[in-house]
Amino acid sequence: MLDVLARMGYSGLTMDEVAVAAGVGKAAIYRRWTSKADLLVSFIEGSVVNTLVVADTGSLRSDLIALMNSVVAHVDGPAGRANRTLLSAIHDDSALAEAFRGGPLARWSAAFADVFDRAVERGEIAPGAGTSVAAEAGPAILVQRWLLGGADLDEALVTTVVDEVMLPLLRPADRRAAPNDGSTSGRPRRFGSITRISSTPPVRAGSTLNVPRPRAGRAIVTLPQLTGSARAQSVMGSRHRSR
Image 1 (cartoon, rainbow, N blue to C red):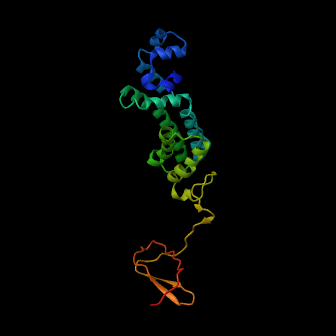
Image 2 (image 1 turned 45 degrees about the horizontal axis):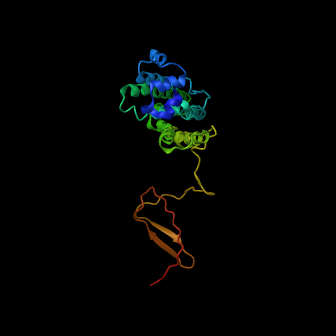
Image 3 (image 1 turned 120 degrees about the vertical axis):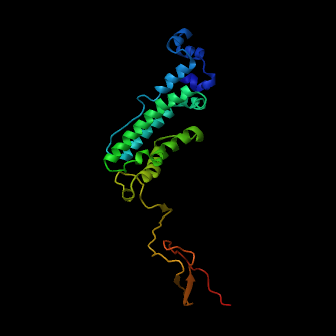
Protein backbone atom coordinates (compact mmCIF):
# COMPACT_ATOMS: atom_id res chain seq x y z
CA MET A 1 0.00 0.00 0.00
CA LEU A 2 2.88 2.40 0.73
CA ASP A 3 4.27 2.08 -2.78
CA VAL A 4 0.84 2.60 -4.32
CA LEU A 5 0.15 5.67 -2.21
CA ALA A 6 3.57 7.19 -2.83
CA ARG A 7 3.26 6.57 -6.57
CA MET A 8 -0.37 7.51 -7.18
CA GLY A 9 -1.11 9.94 -4.38
CA TYR A 10 -4.27 10.31 -2.35
CA SER A 11 -6.64 10.93 -5.25
CA GLY A 12 -5.25 8.07 -7.32
CA LEU A 13 -5.32 5.46 -4.56
CA THR A 14 -8.07 2.87 -4.97
CA MET A 15 -8.90 -0.32 -3.11
CA ASP A 16 -8.40 -2.21 -6.37
CA GLU A 17 -4.81 -0.93 -6.62
CA VAL A 18 -4.16 -1.84 -3.00
CA ALA A 19 -5.49 -5.37 -3.54
CA VAL A 20 -3.31 -5.87 -6.62
CA ALA A 21 -0.22 -4.59 -4.78
CA ALA A 22 -0.98 -6.87 -1.81
CA GLY A 23 -1.63 -9.88 -4.05
CA VAL A 24 -5.07 -10.55 -2.58
CA GLY A 25 -8.65 -10.16 -3.70
CA LYS A 26 -10.48 -6.90 -3.17
CA ALA A 27 -12.91 -8.66 -0.84
CA ALA A 28 -10.06 -9.39 1.56
CA ILE A 29 -9.21 -5.70 1.68
CA TYR A 30 -12.82 -4.73 2.36
CA ARG A 31 -13.13 -7.27 5.16
CA ARG A 32 -10.46 -5.39 7.09
CA TRP A 33 -11.17 -1.81 5.97
CA THR A 34 -14.64 -0.77 4.92
CA SER A 35 -13.45 2.20 2.86
CA LYS A 36 -10.43 3.97 1.48
CA ALA A 37 -10.70 6.48 4.34
CA ASP A 38 -10.60 3.69 6.95
CA LEU A 39 -7.53 2.21 5.27
CA LEU A 40 -5.69 5.55 5.26
CA VAL A 41 -6.63 6.40 8.85
CA SER A 42 -5.27 3.03 9.97
CA PHE A 43 -2.04 3.62 8.06
CA ILE A 44 -1.53 7.16 9.39
CA GLU A 45 -2.16 6.24 13.02
CA GLY A 46 0.48 3.51 12.97
CA SER A 47 2.95 5.00 10.53
CA VAL A 48 5.53 6.09 13.11
CA VAL A 49 5.18 3.23 15.60
CA ASN A 50 8.63 1.92 16.62
CA THR A 51 10.41 4.39 14.32
CA LEU A 52 11.53 7.07 16.80
CA VAL A 53 14.71 6.70 18.82
CA VAL A 54 14.26 8.25 22.28
CA ALA A 55 17.76 7.80 23.68
CA ASP A 56 18.95 8.66 27.20
CA THR A 57 22.62 9.45 26.65
CA GLY A 58 22.98 11.91 29.53
CA SER A 59 23.29 14.87 27.15
CA LEU A 60 20.59 16.99 25.53
CA ARG A 61 22.72 17.41 22.42
CA SER A 62 23.22 13.66 21.90
CA ASP A 63 19.58 12.88 22.70
CA LEU A 64 18.34 15.46 20.16
CA ILE A 65 20.70 14.23 17.45
CA ALA A 66 19.57 10.61 17.95
CA LEU A 67 15.87 11.54 17.94
CA MET A 68 16.06 13.86 14.94
CA ASN A 69 18.11 11.36 12.95
CA SER A 70 15.32 8.82 13.51
CA VAL A 71 12.78 11.39 12.30
CA VAL A 72 14.87 11.94 9.15
CA ALA A 73 15.07 8.18 8.57
CA HIS A 74 11.29 7.98 8.80
CA VAL A 75 10.38 10.89 6.54
CA ASP A 76 12.92 9.78 3.93
CA GLY A 77 11.55 6.22 3.97
CA PRO A 78 8.47 4.66 2.33
CA ALA A 79 6.09 5.64 5.14
CA GLY A 80 7.32 9.24 5.09
CA ARG A 81 6.90 9.52 1.34
CA ALA A 82 3.41 8.07 1.61
CA ASN A 83 2.52 10.48 4.41
CA ARG A 84 3.67 13.42 2.33
CA THR A 85 1.15 12.60 -0.39
CA LEU A 86 -1.65 12.79 2.19
CA LEU A 87 -0.83 16.19 3.65
CA SER A 88 -2.79 18.06 1.01
CA ALA A 89 -5.89 16.05 1.89
CA ILE A 90 -5.96 16.57 5.64
CA HIS A 91 -7.35 20.10 5.32
CA ASP A 92 -10.51 18.77 3.70
CA ASP A 93 -10.83 15.45 5.55
CA SER A 94 -11.36 15.72 9.29
CA ALA A 95 -10.81 11.98 9.82
CA LEU A 96 -7.34 12.14 8.22
CA ALA A 97 -6.52 15.31 10.16
CA GLU A 98 -7.45 13.66 13.44
CA ALA A 99 -5.40 10.59 12.51
CA PHE A 100 -2.34 12.79 11.98
CA ARG A 101 -2.86 14.58 15.28
CA GLY A 102 -3.40 11.35 17.22
CA GLY A 103 -0.71 9.39 15.38
CA PRO A 104 2.53 10.94 14.05
CA LEU A 105 2.18 14.36 15.70
CA ALA A 106 1.28 12.94 19.13
CA ARG A 107 4.14 10.42 19.06
CA TRP A 108 6.68 12.99 17.90
CA SER A 109 5.53 15.43 20.59
CA ALA A 110 5.81 12.75 23.28
CA ALA A 111 9.30 11.76 22.11
CA PHE A 112 10.61 15.33 22.18
CA ALA A 113 8.90 15.96 25.54
CA ASP A 114 10.80 12.99 27.05
CA VAL A 115 14.11 14.38 25.80
CA PHE A 116 13.41 17.90 27.05
CA ASP A 117 12.09 16.71 30.43
CA ARG A 118 15.32 14.81 31.09
CA ALA A 119 17.34 17.87 30.07
CA VAL A 120 15.39 19.95 32.62
CA GLU A 121 16.13 17.38 35.33
CA ARG A 122 19.84 17.55 34.49
CA GLY A 123 19.76 21.35 34.61
CA GLU A 124 20.67 21.75 30.94
CA ILE A 125 17.62 23.84 30.09
CA ALA A 126 15.12 25.84 32.11
CA PRO A 127 11.67 24.44 32.95
CA GLY A 128 9.28 25.29 30.15
CA ALA A 129 11.98 25.55 27.50
CA GLY A 130 10.84 22.28 25.95
CA THR A 131 7.39 23.70 25.22
CA SER A 132 8.63 27.02 23.86
CA VAL A 133 8.79 28.15 20.25
CA ALA A 134 12.55 27.64 20.45
CA ALA A 135 11.99 23.90 20.86
CA GLU A 136 10.05 23.81 17.60
CA ALA A 137 12.71 25.60 15.57
CA GLY A 138 14.88 22.58 14.78
CA PRO A 139 12.14 20.17 13.70
CA ALA A 140 10.51 22.99 11.72
CA ILE A 141 13.66 23.37 9.61
CA LEU A 142 13.64 19.66 8.79
CA VAL A 143 9.94 19.67 7.93
CA GLN A 144 10.29 22.74 5.72
CA ARG A 145 13.13 21.16 3.76
CA TRP A 146 11.25 17.88 3.53
CA LEU A 147 8.04 19.44 2.26
CA LEU A 148 9.13 22.50 0.30
CA GLY A 149 12.84 22.61 -0.33
CA GLY A 150 13.37 19.15 -1.73
CA ALA A 151 16.81 19.14 -0.07
CA ASP A 152 18.42 15.98 1.24
CA LEU A 153 18.06 15.39 4.96
CA ASP A 154 21.05 13.71 6.56
CA GLU A 155 23.02 13.41 9.78
CA ALA A 156 25.21 16.41 8.95
CA LEU A 157 22.16 18.65 8.63
CA VAL A 158 20.71 17.31 11.88
CA THR A 159 23.95 18.05 13.75
CA THR A 160 24.09 21.58 12.32
CA VAL A 161 20.47 22.27 13.28
CA VAL A 162 21.02 21.02 16.83
CA ASP A 163 24.31 22.89 17.35
CA GLU A 164 23.53 26.16 15.61
CA VAL A 165 19.77 26.54 16.15
CA MET A 166 18.31 24.46 18.97
CA LEU A 167 20.99 24.54 21.65
CA PRO A 168 21.69 28.29 21.43
CA LEU A 169 17.96 29.00 21.72
CA LEU A 170 17.20 26.49 24.47
CA ARG A 171 20.15 26.86 26.82
CA PRO A 172 20.33 29.50 29.55
CA ALA A 173 22.80 32.27 28.80
CA ASP A 174 25.40 31.02 31.31
CA ARG A 175 25.52 27.60 29.63
CA ARG A 176 25.78 29.04 26.13
CA ALA A 177 29.18 30.46 26.97
CA ALA A 178 30.85 27.13 27.77
CA PRO A 179 29.16 24.02 26.33
CA ASN A 180 30.79 20.81 27.49
CA ASP A 181 29.30 18.24 25.14
CA GLY A 182 31.20 18.84 21.93
CA SER A 183 28.81 21.31 20.34
CA THR A 184 29.96 24.54 18.74
CA SER A 185 27.16 26.71 20.10
CA GLY A 186 28.16 29.49 22.45
CA ARG A 187 31.64 29.99 20.98
CA PRO A 188 32.73 33.29 19.41
CA ARG A 189 31.78 33.54 15.77
CA ARG A 190 34.76 33.63 13.42
CA PHE A 191 34.63 35.55 10.17
CA GLY A 192 37.40 34.20 7.96
CA SER A 193 40.46 34.22 10.20
CA ILE A 194 39.34 37.11 12.42
CA THR A 195 37.43 36.79 15.68
CA ARG A 196 35.68 40.03 16.60
CA ILE A 197 36.11 40.91 20.27
CA SER A 198 35.21 44.44 21.39
CA SER A 199 36.69 45.82 24.58
CA THR A 200 36.12 49.48 23.80
CA PRO A 201 34.45 51.30 26.72
CA PRO A 202 30.96 52.70 26.15
CA VAL A 203 30.61 56.14 24.59
CA ARG A 204 27.86 58.40 25.87
CA ALA A 205 25.58 60.36 23.55
CA GLY A 206 26.95 63.83 22.92
CA SER A 207 30.46 62.99 24.09
CA THR A 208 33.62 63.43 22.06
CA LEU A 209 36.17 60.96 20.82
CA ASN A 210 39.81 62.01 20.55
CA VAL A 211 41.40 60.27 17.59
CA PRO A 212 45.20 60.63 17.26
CA ARG A 213 46.27 61.88 13.84
CA PRO A 214 49.86 61.70 12.55
CA ARG A 215 51.44 65.12 12.02
CA ALA A 216 48.12 66.87 12.52
CA GLY A 217 47.61 67.03 16.26
CA ARG A 218 44.36 65.58 17.50
CA ALA A 219 41.02 65.53 15.73
CA ILE A 220 37.85 66.01 17.77
CA VAL A 221 34.93 63.87 16.59
CA THR A 222 31.46 64.49 18.08
CA LEU A 223 29.17 61.46 18.35
CA PRO A 224 25.71 62.82 19.15
CA GLN A 225 23.82 59.86 17.72
CA LEU A 226 25.42 57.02 19.66
CA THR A 227 23.66 55.60 22.68
CA GLY A 228 25.38 54.80 25.94
CA SER A 229 25.73 51.10 25.02
CA ALA A 230 27.23 51.66 21.58
CA ARG A 231 30.86 51.02 20.73
CA ALA A 232 32.84 53.54 18.72
CA GLN A 233 34.94 51.75 16.15
CA SER A 234 36.40 54.40 13.87
CA VAL A 235 39.35 54.35 11.50
CA MET A 236 40.53 57.75 10.33
CA GLY A 237 42.22 57.04 7.02
CA SER A 238 41.84 60.26 5.06
CA ARG A 239 44.10 63.29 5.36
CA HIS A 240 42.75 66.53 6.81
CA ARG A 241 42.31 69.28 4.29
CA SER A 242 42.28 72.83 5.50
CA ARG A 243 40.18 75.41 3.79
